[in-house]
Length: 215
Image (tube, rainbow, N blue to C red; front, side, top):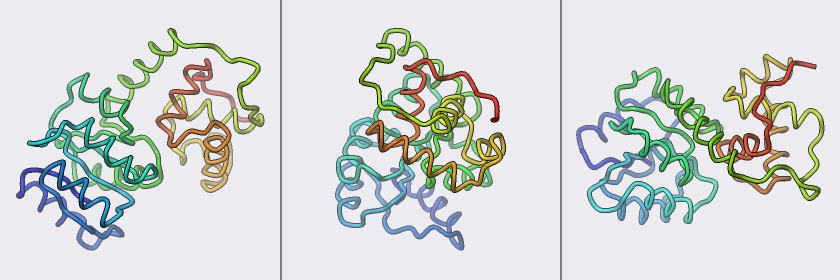
């Protein structure tokens, strides 16, 4: 689903997706319409403009996730403001891309978002991880109740926290892409988390944000 209040921009995104593996099941011009259409169309991936005329971006993101907690949300915004990025990610957006991105960058961001990988316009990833580290300094350290991960799951988790993509982790650890996905999914299940963004924050909170060496 594509959500943007500017018809020409929204139409341009739809045209860019013509012939791609993605089927546009709905288009919305404001937040309220997006929530209604998401409930009916149940899209798996949503491209969302952060600043809509009726509802705030955070409210829309949370509303969309309440309709489907598994939906992937890629913010496509003209704003690269520090607070806008952090608010969107904290609300549950999977990725954040500026509208100045090229068509190739947009398609790559869609593919990665569809896989549940956090993706950000260059320069924004460091901002988000920096904020998570700041929050981690205020949070609790591991306790006896922390779920037990296997050594490999912990190794993959450290690389997720370092901001590596599935493909990069697979290359670093000499694993298949699917094996990395399975390790991430098992870790999400054990920790009762929903996506890689939450997983990265958890890892940083637990002091696991240093990249591990391949075993």
